[in-house]
Length: 175
Image (tube, rainbow, N blue to C red):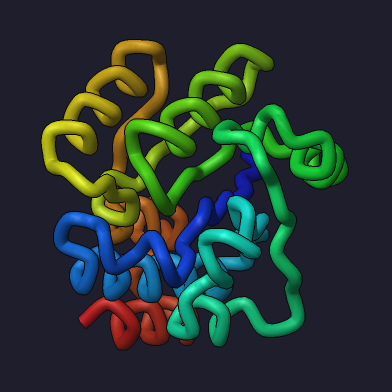
């Protein structure tokens, strides 16, 4: 199964406003490094960076060699550039992480489900300003057919075997 990870709007003016933002960033860093280790491609999105600032340095440093796709819509699925890049990869499944669970992540998940993609949302690598919005966003995604996962569950599920250099690197990253 071909998978791709979409990183949504982890920007300087948004992150400080989010619930449990330090833990969110820590989880996201591990997820992104793990995805790179496991050769899962990443599409990097930013919402109106002139107003919301660039992606935070902790994430931007991981994404070296890539540039973000700028959008002015909540759903990545309504960005022609995103859909074009997504179609070039032709994934069976799209993994979502980022900000905010109940807005951009939710709308992206729904739009991807509507075009026939399997969607996994990394519940501990998405966040909202308020916990209730986060929780209801995840619930609605699940009700519509999206799968919820955690960064560890996802990475170990992709790794499959408990030996080898890649496994040891993954363990070092997570522990």
